Length: 451
Image (cartoon, rainbow, N blue to C red):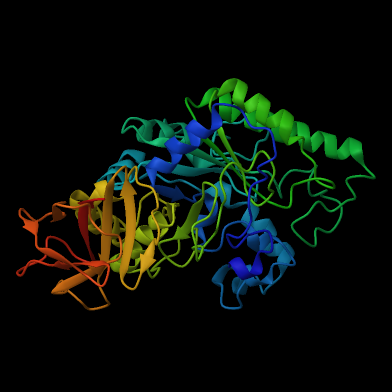
């Protein structure tokens, strides 16, 4: 999907270091960097169709409407009919099994430390009790509106806060339901406004006011928020200027210490670099977060194929070794549940984290970061060497060669193993003898030592 999204960077972008930033921001970014592993949740009425979220509405984004997409085929590939019925999905959205405490429990077991939830995606449907539009889950047009859990965003945030998770609020700046972004009386050929914003400033001003009002609600009515995660990178100056300086100041007046991630835009309000569905080849000089899907897409898909646990763990380790965070996405079902296979993946990751979490959380990169099947992380004077298992490999290698030498007289240990390991210096590297017998965990083994 990234190849079809020119607004998604590939990790080479850098934040403008000359831009003036609040004095407190570096400390907050250090806090964010400590978390390392978070859960991304894309959820909305679109889950009923098992289709890509929002993007099928855009005429130009044909990749989002594959020829075999059932709702597309059923409507004879008629875009206007498809749009009409997609936008009416709110009238049948009734996630009666929604229980965010089960989501939070699964994330906690996996060793995750923060959550990012889609308060509103590009289609404009609000998963919170906004006063700005009727296109919301708490409106009488949605059957779930009468449920005590109808203000979904509040319940999600509360469930994760109860487990001391960081809170990241996803919000789409673009809104393809808002009549001040896509005028209803003319075609909307692409993801941008279907009118010249500079020629119609009064129309655009209404949209800016609309966006600011929604952000004000999110930042003032839903408890403590750590990150405002803004999507819709095309919404930027000069043609789509939503006055980010004023919006960020307003948001931070409600949420002191708020990190703003105006992703792909650059400048002073992209506090976190956001590679999507990709991992940079090298460490980045700024704080960054790779958002990746566990399955094939961001939204729920019936019978989706999920990445193997080994792959997910190796992605986490590789990202952390390069100084980043992994924001791993799962799309809840139309009923509000997480797929059993996805939860099983989280539990298997949790088994590994129960032994090795200290080598992930709160760590920082250390050169050479990666060599062969080893990835390095560090915490103060402690080095963690993650030995990645090859596909199908269940036994640890007899020896591991590490280019970061231990301190003289240092003890080397394998996390999850009771006794220190034997090692020697050979060709300016440490050669560590791994213990015989069953390994303490699967997929990767962590050697810990001082330097």
